[in-house]
Each structure stands twice: as structure tokens, then as C-alpha cells.
Length: 109
Image 1 (spheres, rainbow, N blue to C red):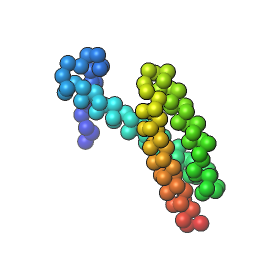
Image 2: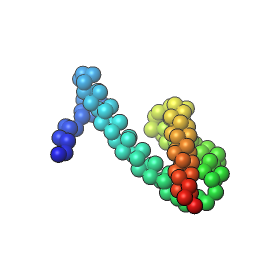
Image 3: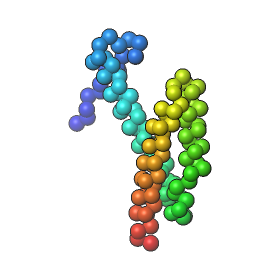
């Protein structure tokens, strides 16, 4: 049995009630989770490809990712510092995930 498809939420400029707003936020959250699943699949690939556990944490790459996000945020009219803070946590969680995956892949070696 499959879940019934929810109707598309209203665009933000069409919202008239908090129910409308919450439906939109819930939809965006579902989309973000799907994107995070896709992003973490790349962490699985990185764990498989990297041969050295110490290379899982790459501070230069982390800084590059945070700078890229800040630039994208600014271009979109959002506060770069706010998005940088969100991405800092995302990157730290990604590193923790990748480290765990790296260890598990090599546990049997």
C-alpha cells in the first residue's frame, strides 16, 4: 500500500493561514531530507574511496564548502553567517558519518 500523495502546498506568497505555511514548511523539510540522503550517499562514496582515515577530516575542504555556501546565501539575499552556521553543523555531521562508514568498511580487513 502506498501513501496518498499530498496536494502541493501553496507558494509562500499565496499562504493565508498558518496551516498553509506549515504545509509548505513540511514539504520543504521532506525535500531537504531527500537531498540530505543524496548528500550522505556521497559521504558513503568518500568513505569507500579514501584510503587514509585521517583524510576523512579535511579542514581546507570544509572551509571551501562553508565559503561556497556563504557566497550562495549572499547571492540569494540570505544572511551568509546564518547559512554558514547551519552548514558548519551539516559538515561536522557528514564528517562523523563518513568516519563511522570508513571504520565499518575496514572492520573486516
